[in-house]
Image (cartoon, rainbow, N blue to C red; front, top):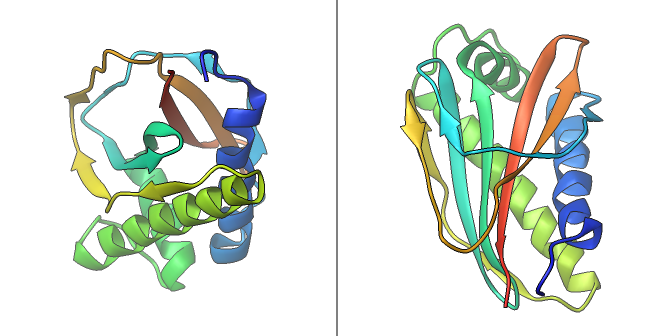
Length: 156
């Protein structure tokens, strides 16, 4: 896999929009992908999940804290105004479901991957890797709310 193309990115987007619809009742629209340095600021919650196997890399799901609270509220069907342990657990499970579904989609294409347990970050963070550009795909819902899916895939 020397070059990352739509066939590598689409399973992440299909899984993300499907899980957001099924678990959060959110119709997310896929925005235009772009290359972005994986740097995040004070008001950001981040779920980092790696993947290994026939394809290797990492996916990060980034939310501004108010959006993370909104998504957690929708998942557990009660108002969340602060990211407490219950809300973080819900957001982590969202990441697991998205990546689990992504792995299933890849398996139907003959690509076997395993996912790592999620790592949660909150606040100002910056990541770097030596193997791939970080592709950011915004998922927008309710006109002004945005979740970012960041994907870095290691080429051969």
